[in-house]
Image (cartoon, rainbow, N blue to C red):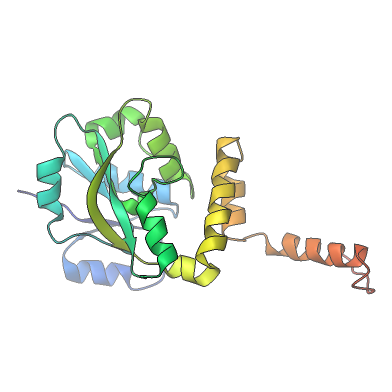
Length: 221
């Protein structure tokens, strides 16, 4: 049974390429962006089943046995349930809800398993830097039921540990609502990664001046 492992790098400057070459996996490089990178890898893949995996996610050792046994011909798209490498109660609560399929509980970090024929019918992922998984699965639901395997994959909790899981989840919820109501993915990306810090900092300065907390004016050049 032939299995292709394809790593698609978004022009990073770390040791990704050398690690891949030493490991004997297929290394590809394209423009940065999750949707763009996943489409690039899918187009290069020759298999009938595609597995989209984030770099910080660990699969079960019997991953291919699970897929062979559970991914029947009737299934077009499936994901796993999610666990974190952090055992605190809030992470366990998050994990519990990944057994359900909804726009708020099914994401790319749960590993997307999809038939390539169905992937092509959907037109692949949109070339988004963010929300590409939400969009892809949302479109898939119009044609098929999303299957949740009972098996777990393990993913890193570092992004939640850095910001705090409650704060991060509130932010994610708000951004998903924004996306569903038409907020552009460019703006969502900007808000998610705080790329527009100058505007945010200036907003805080203006707020402080209006409240009388800052008596020093400034010029926004």
